[in-house]
Image 1: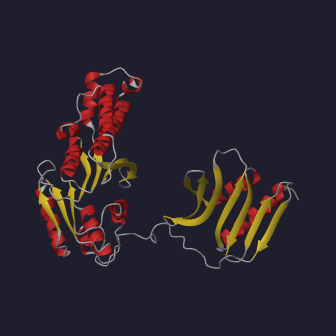
Image 2 (image 1 turned 120 degrees about the horizontal axis):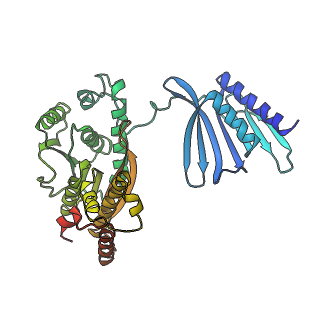
Image 3 (image 1 turned 90 degrees about the vertical axis):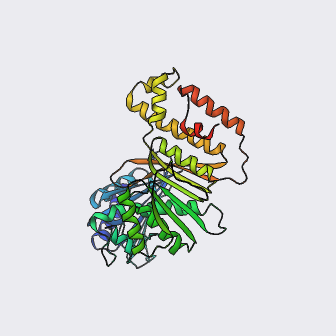
Length: 394
């Protein structure tokens, strides 16, 4: 029997275990194919919108990529990979495990073994995921129309529920990096309807058991009134919302400052407030980078990327990167360690950049060198001033 026949026998066993609901997972290794840096492949069954699929995790040298396929497509992919690429595979089922191996001499091993486990895994793709914020009988989630009174997430609230958990998950890892030496004062600037503000307070008080005061700053009076009512109904005594703007708010004493989707220079205003308050943590997700774009358009400096910036969409993207890159350097100048990463805000909006500044109490930054870099960046792109730089007077 040649390799192809042995592969077919192994794949037929795979299809049989999937059909009779005994399949657990399959792993492929010892990759010798042409796809650069691919090392392993793992597949398991999942349920997405009531449709059973095979979820493939492609493990590369420095990253993992997950792709979902129909059962039929997945079986064909396994067969193709074993015919050309992977030399070893193990099929796990509740009745038996099967080892498939192509040795150096092209000798093929196909051997059944006792099952590693007899427990069939859950196919639930999302509901059983452990979340930092649970839906169980949370009055504020009901008042925000995310859950019913029994704690069941509404169908049209699923995206928002995932979103607030995603935000809290990000913030939880950042909060762990700042000193835990007493009560914390959190300010959420531009809090809107307060989804994140409520969830963060819930997390700090009821998950971390931290003594915290959380304030949402919002310029729309109706939202401030609504959120304060919801906070009172939830007995969140140290959560309150105030009417005002980022620019006018007195941030003194703030330990954690958050500003998500503050438009254009309002993000700079928020960073400035955080720096002046000597906040331990500053988290912003900017939007609309008009100020720097106008500067670049106004001066039209000739540089190595002007072949790109003559196109509006590229100019817009360039302005975003330059604006946020300079913001990061200014935060470093002010004594903060910086992180910039991409996150998904929710299912209906594009990816966003989040800028994080963590107070560096052992700062060794060369401020003169940072100033040189800031000035060089401005000159290169024809920028007379950056709003945050001007406010800080550097």
